Image (cartoon, rainbow, N blue to C red; front, top):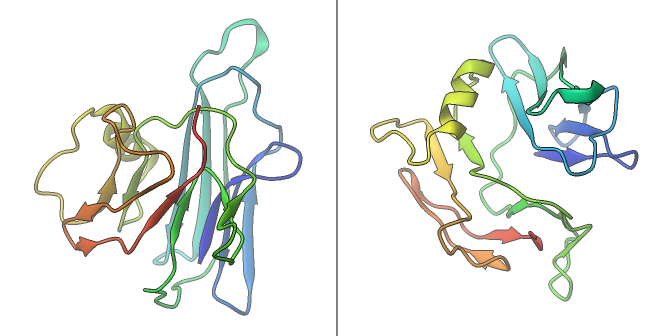
Length: 171
């Protein structure tokens, strides 16, 4: 599986595991409060790398925290069809309290793609308010400004339905 989020120091991190081994790409500096960033993560099975992309969208007054981190990663991951996709929170693994560590911020148009895209292609995906039709590798695209409930959502995709998506409190 994988996790794309913040570590305990507030740094963007992309963690990948095949059940036996772990790979992590972590930004060198924490994100700043009240700053919009473009954040992307890529698992490239062809090259066996994982890449984390962090671009400050307002680089004024020394606020630029932009960087790209690429580290060795797996060439494939096991299929986990029963796993929940969790956005803006961490899964606890229990039904009583399914998520914790909720995002205290905003998400804008997250996308999940089946291929390893470069930064320009990732940016084009999120900058398009309406995702391009006919892209068979675009698995899921959300736009939270379109009345998606913030507790949970069932999303239809071109490849069927995501079993369930648990979304943390997004403010």
